[in-house]
Image (cartoon, rainbow, N blue to C red):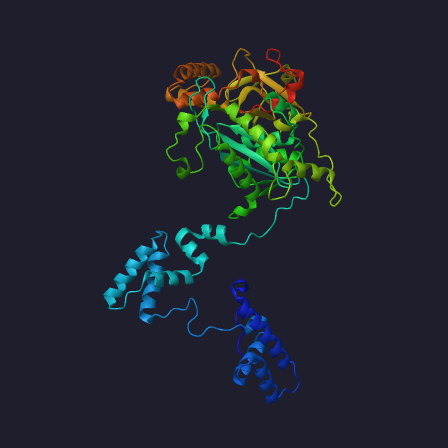
Length: 555
């Protein structure tokens, strides 16, 4: 028996040939199923089909090897498409040149390869092949092999490796993905309206509903703090946050997620994040190395949001080709706070309410259906809410361990105090102190009773500063050759730097960035007070906004 022939593309088979194949198939099948068939049976079949008896036996052999209708289709004589007729010596030259020159990380063009092959053939006195012939030889190579040798194994894996595994998210908050991106728009200074830089966006998506769970916008590069603030925004109620920014509409996504899915950036491996997740029973999965499809949901969300951002003044677009001669710095017009508010409107008023092609319904509808159920699948019910909103964020902030001394607690060369410290002065064990890098005017000490206590500057006349201002001050002191770094020197240096920044902000981006890092006046405290410690001089917030507005201080 002859080997079965591969199935042709049925959409390309002419109708007449298909009808003839079906007619032949019926007749040959009847002949093949005839018990003890004779030559007379074959002659009768030949008469029905109008062909020679020798061809009947050929069709019978085809049927026995492959009893499908396609085996009865007419077959072309001569060379089939893709067959190449070429002298063995020329073919050897082509294959050698492909291996030695084309399949390299230098990635030469096909035209360069053709030129080299023709040169080699001329040297050897062989016929020079056409570009079409060379291209066919390239096309015969496995695409994965070509990409791996020209662009590397990672590129080949990303394009051709099977997307095995799945992200199981059967209900809302069962899986949250978080990632960062540089926003494709230039932010401006809030005073001079001069360009500063592109801000960073850390954003979280609920994989089940595709809702945006939360986000954090900042001028600083991604860090453990960015992750903490984004996670807090995702888990805590957003009514106060929306009200503070005058954003109409509902953003009902809130609650403790069951599982986080993160990439392998160092900010996702911080001890603060790990311990915070353990504290609240949040499982953490890291994207397997070299498996970009595992982050598909968050990457598509980022792409969607950046597509919307391209409508803003000062957009940098996603590529040089898109940008053309458009100058984002000349057209930039929005501050960091305005970009944040715009993103809030884009999420609440547009993205959540628009049809999501991946799930067939708007994300907001998918969220509500996932909680309540739809008669086919049972809903998960009310998510696990965060009882102590203040503590939730504190539990994810970076921390250090410090001794309690008579002078207080020293962190970042700054003295902190609260009357409650009298209880622990002289303790030999260092105590855990957490801080918000955006505002060092208050830190949070974890007492032996498991409660966080607010510690403020020992000198309450000191202004709120950010950790980034603090680092710049230390750098300047070192450059000035100051061997001793003390609190007075730090604050005096920061005051000098702020004065310089205010005077130069219209001229330099660096000065504008420095001023943008200063804690905002209305947020002298990064967190609502616990009621313990020296906090009387800190400006209070309205009672209905005290918890969330401070927790979600973005810059």
